[in-house]
Length: 182
Image 1 (cartoon, rainbow, N blue to C red):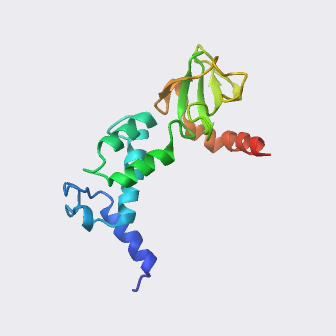
Image 2: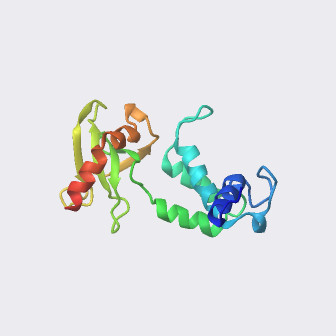
């Protein structure tokens, strides 16, 4: 059985993405120069996913906490340049992040604002009492909301019964994003 070059890269990445720059990873205890470039990238994505998803061994944590952990582990566990690039790529409030506004309402970030990363578009799904409401997209960068409504904090996925995957699987977020781009 012969496998192609791309298949060999995929196998190598799958086998080595738990290695760490300091040699304390597994399965072989490789160090920085021995770890394939693509495995270093997948290690970042895998870590971020593990922290922000509910697992049998730990509950989901907020994106900002995951990014903070990745930043603190750069140069030891993760390639420094790749870690910083990953953090910039994910952003402050990435799409799918569950957030609470200063009004007490809860929503899901549906798109980032390239001009003001602190003011994305949010799909409101809970009122100030955390009761379900009809989905209502709000562009926090709009002059109507400047100085009035802002994000207070990011919440872990599942907070107040809000799971971003539920809205993605229903197509709600994609429908709204499609309407905004028209």
